[in-house]
Length: 229
Image (cartoon, rainbow, N blue to C red; front, side, top):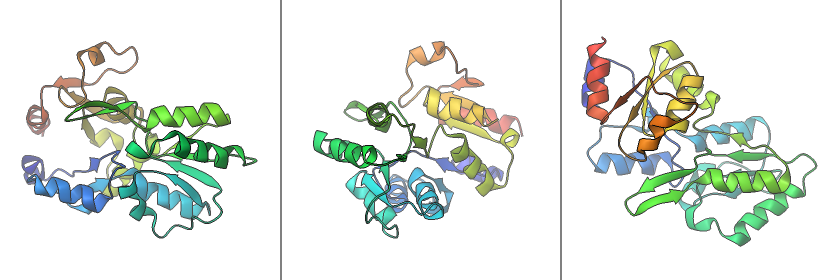
């Protein structure tokens, strides 16, 4: 990352992190030695808050407890939509059923999902992501969720707008074949998949998404990019 910044290239961290506020997410990475600021992070929750304000939506939140502060300035009385994120242990039957009841009671249900990932990887293994629970509510309420976060095209477009570059001028580096690579390519960007994190060998046989290149790690991706300057 230091080499990218030293080269003069613009940089954005596009994350579907919804178990922490951007501030706490950045503090965690800074504690690991990364040179990163909140202004360099594009995340779903702040984008969702903009949508809620623009459309006068009052959310019922089904999110992680640590993410709730992101919605502090949002009116949540008498909800007229549901916002779902990676709620982790909050994904209980009771909480999902409460969100279902809010949606099913609306004439025109509005479901906003902070990403639609299928799973993610932590130190103790793979875990179900928000997409699985989003699909359950979609099916039960016969509604299509509005996705805020990767792989939504608008999410990548917002990151590009913040940097002031076109899709053709940007390259996405990620470990998720669908959300990172596929989402970026649908936006018109090039995309590299790293063989780390949640990468699995079967990704290389994905029927629809083919990265512009595979790299073994972030350092190799940076080498490839800097060689093209």
